Length: 402
Image 1 (tube, one colour):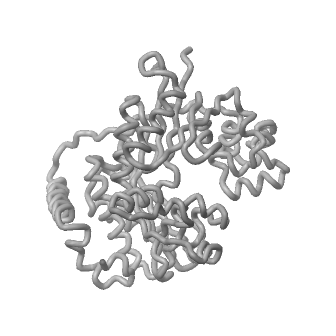
Image 2 (image 1 turned 60 degrees about the vertical axis):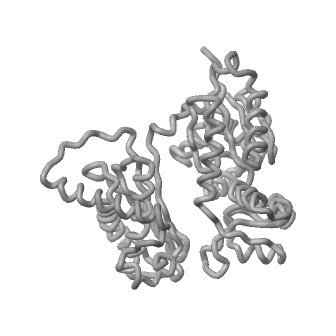
Image 3 (image 1 turned 180 degrees about the horizontal axis):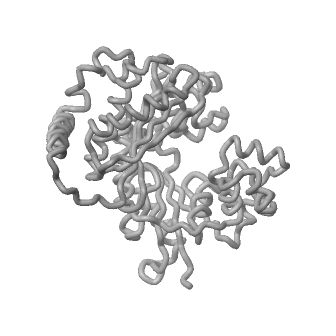
């Protein structure tokens, strides 16, 4: 059986690196990657969370995901940059154009990382380490930012390999090299969440190696399917394949943290409508349709609530996605015991879009599609805020009034 060769390519501090490159292109003399700096939401609102940080932030123990005000306490001279998603998408697309030259089996895992299947390509293009270094060099020279490349014979180990040395390194982590990670703290294991790690520690399982050597039945009895999965990952067991970006179950969506905690479903519906508009527009830009909708809330105690439903027909219509989200959202709202802090809407993209038989009921859907396309064309030409729904003008959420 032919040896699998899997690359995982991950941008180093993606958002911040992309901001730095753009600023340097525009003539800035200071590379913000060389000073303590973060990409974060507005510091005037509660959406201020550290999304990306420069490597000098490590000296101040600033971590991704923490509130901005906490990071500012750690470093008084911290430079704060607000996110620019249009820029990040452009940088991401440019990177994937380069990566796609080396294989037709590329899985876009997120905006700043992907898997590449290099199996059987060495005789054609060259040694795996040489090609990985070439990809890193080309991205740095042509685009101005750096990436790490992890190489393995399974996907999960390739992903973990990119974390072994940073930034701008090529690392290997094959199934016969598990000793490289077995002494690492258990929190470094992919898919081992915070609550799982705390529970593992109660059983005196503190390293990846200790989990790998644990009895599988013991782990399954206490952690169910999730326990079995992380036990397999600790042992380098992962049979998943690199999927083409155009195939498989994928999702897109948007979420927002509300300026004020609310328990008014009518106000939540306005926010959901705004999120559905953004999500469905992304679907149409991708030329895709969805067949499932998911709604999520976070209450003011940071507890998450999620629910999803399958649609009767595949769609990219803003109205259909909103109506489904509204029904789900109302049902889910009954389960929330506190005020809502965050609202999210996402959809699952179809593997293949089925041809639909047009009926009289579809006439309304066709009309909706024409309206959606018209709105898209206006926003594409004149900007996101060129046209808005009247219902947003009375919203208490400043963000959706813009």
